[in-house]
Image 1 (cartoon, rainbow, N blue to C red):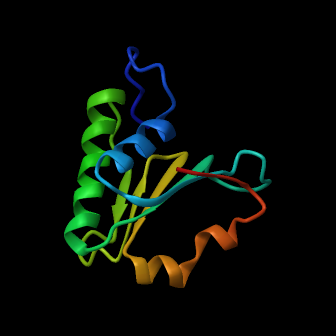
Image 2 (tube, rainbow, N blue to C red):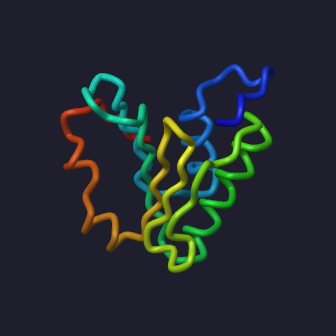
Length: 120
């Protein structure tokens, strides 16, 4: 994992949420998985983009802000080719950016409803 920039004093999940909101990501939520046993991640950040270009913009802006503000790049990106569901892996934070139909189909909020969910 790329070390976080020493000047960056906030939480990466909050930085990601702010980036998504700045680019008009819809229905942005943060799922806190830290209290759930046997989960490999600390947070899921989920949002909806209303089109393929919007999803791509959200994804690239999250990457840009995380790199600029926290000096961190995602370890893996999946789904950018069709942009129905893009996943950015920041090691302990997974960012899911969906188009509306895919978000409704996979319904991750329901799957993790035993965790603390913050809506923005």
